[in-house]
Length: 104
Image (cartoon, rainbow, N blue to C red):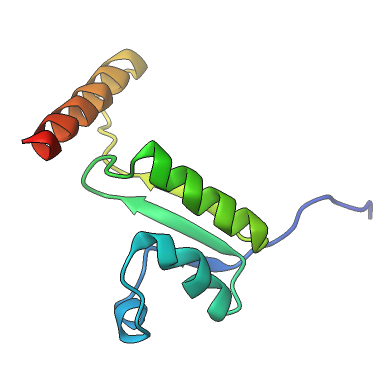
């Protein structure tokens, strides 16, 4: 059997009620929450479209990397009938709509 470079990680997909119960409030607290539980992975859920800004995502990624935590995002609003180009167009429109909604 040859050696493998794989590393199995354990973490959560999203947060549970314990996130707020432990006093965490912001998604920027997720790296500390994950580390406190002794986990080394976290999957950010984007169930209603992408609502995570680039700046916040960068801060979260940097903090998780410092703690040795793998940070990933899951967008599960894909639709089976969409081609790649339609999917990209829809996601860009959702992002544009979200920027417009938050600006007003």
